[in-house]
Image (tube, rainbow, N blue to C red; front, side, top):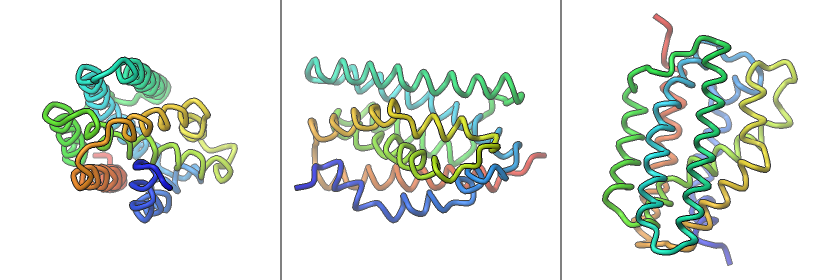
Length: 209
């Protein structure tokens, strides 16, 4: 029998497939994505990860047991590693990590922080798991497709790594452990998946002034 996290992922696979075939994601694999577009995405993702770290911290604070405390601390450290990756892009490519959030980013961060502040820890995990599982899925799918010369190969290698998969699974275990209202969990999971697609849409729509 599928676990709660597995059931939610499979219920939303159509959105995962849409993300994989998204112009932005395919541009990363081919290396043909405009550098300015990727730089804009990195800047917005830095804003998003700041909120993601705060949501992890609230999950840690609300954890009812030691397992949750340890797991959320590990996940928070993992998000910090992602921010360091972005700092590397910023240094090499002149990415502005202090950009104001665009509407798609604000919608996602507002959603995450509201859930983290107002809802129980299992619901927090449901709102955060789609990001981790989706990126692990995209990284794995793109690993064999990404051209060696793609300037975005480091992005693919990060999200296809065993270390990132372990973090995604860690969060899924928390979702399975704490659970919550099943209807609410389903709504939160799907909303996060939809917000991920909007995030990619926003990067493609953006044009450098």
